[in-house]
Amino acid sequence: MNRKYKIVIFGATGFTGELCARFMSERYSDIPIAIAGRNAEKLEKIKKTNNLSFPAIVADAFDVDALDKMCKDAEVVLSTAGPYHKYGNNLLEACINNECHYVDITGESFWIKGMIDKHHEAAEKKGLRIINACGFDSAPSDLGSFYAMNQVDGEVKSIQCFQAWKGEASGGTMETMFSSMDAKLAKGGLGKFSLNPKNSVSENQKRNTNDKIKIHKIPHLGGWTGPFVMALPNTRVVRRSAALSKATGKYYGDDFVYSEGAYYSKKSAARKVSFMTLVLGLIIVSPLRKLLRGFFRKPGEGPSQKAMDSGFFKSRFLVKTQDGVRAFSMSSSGDPGYKMTSRMACESALCLAVENPADLPGGEDFGGLLTPSIGLGNVLIKRLKNIGVVFEEIPLNN
Image 1 (spheres, one colour):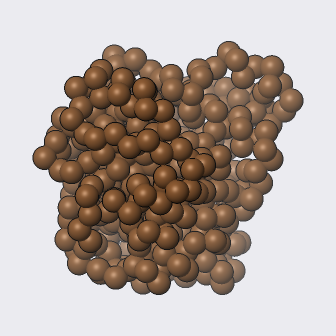
Image 2 (cartoon, one colour):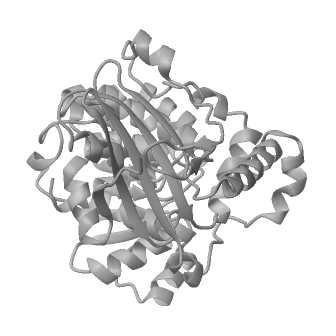
Image 3 (cartoon, one colour):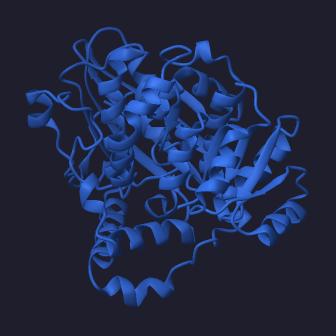
């Protein structure tokens, strides 16, 4: 593939899109990259504010002709324009029709399911890698599990993930949560195996998979766990990876079980945050969301640079094998939802734009609606290590 642009960042005038453009300009200014969005004035403002030399492409998410033209010029489209159930359908279809790869940062599992049902087969036949969930939703869960899986010998019975983080929500994230419920769309992605291929779930997996995480002390790791607000999309992505892994490398196994919760150092913190999570959930699913929406950030607004720099995430993975238990982690400084989401998404796009396709999982002609680990695997892990993300085995606390 040899096109005008290696990467087009679509949604560059949004909060995360601007972070992506800035990161690319600072580290990869020699790569042919363009920024895109629906408003020419805002695109020029982004260029001026961040001193960007990238060309700007005006393309609205509902202008099919403009999207087709943009995708014909791109090898990879990196989309940060959410909510994806509102703004993602035409773009993803344009990528497939015009044969360019695609990366996004969606956590909307119901939307991913719809795109899998509609486009997986076409992308697979064309050898196009359409890779959702390359931000904090759900790259750490997915890549961390993949990394852990490949560090142990023999069959892995289960992986339990425990997420620790410090960060804030942007207006775009809040808009996605509220608009999903307003449109009554989220129900389609709630099934435990909603992203799995047909006939890929064993009876043992159905029987032993439990997404109801209660507050309790974590064996072998210390600390406490409780419900994690983004466990729903993350668990679905990892379970899809487990099912697809048979075609790309080490198979997770017919009976592999994955679960995810939060990690807290103290029981009091687990209780406090779990209660706050419950309250937020009740607000979002109730009519009160329309009254309270105005109290949250609006789309395009996000944390300050100081807040993003002071954030972090650490995803811990407790791996049970036939030989015992081992623990691993994936971690980084920087706000996970924005600073690190933008960087993980950029590095994901760069895997498709500049790395040797033969080195990617499944080989040069592999394609479909994929996850970060199945579509990018160790190539992405290597790139993330180069920007400071740490993958390592951690000691057990017995």
